[in-house]
Amino acid sequence: MSNVAMTTTVPGPFDQAKARVTEALAAEGFGVLTQIDMRATLAAKIGAQVEPYEILGACNPGLAHQALEADRSVGLLLPCNVTLREVAGGVEVAILDPRAMFGVADEALQERLSGLVEEARSRLTRALEALG
Image (cartoon, rainbow, N blue to C red; front, side, top):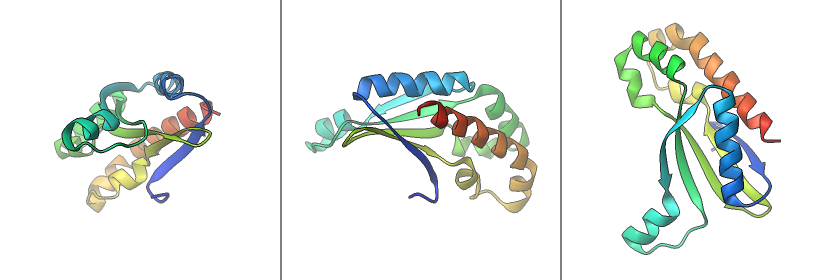
């Protein structure tokens, strides 16, 4: 999924990496609205055992408001998904690339939101880069 995700690997334990990711997102104006613990959910629902894996729903309120003002259906593409998955050597952090996310919109909406999409992408890229 490299064509839709921006990724990095953060060394250290899962909880420390998650805290660092949350801080890096906050530095770029993103708050975490939702947290889904896939490991716990899959274990409880179907008895599956997977590595620590969480999905964070990150949102920058200013950017989200601008996007919703352009077209209310943009809410279907929000919030920005960030996954954290324990891997050898640390925690893989992946963020859905806003270009890919908004690539499903019609051309007119893509054109209206192009600056906003690039701003979101720049902020998310800086958050990833801050993780090392």
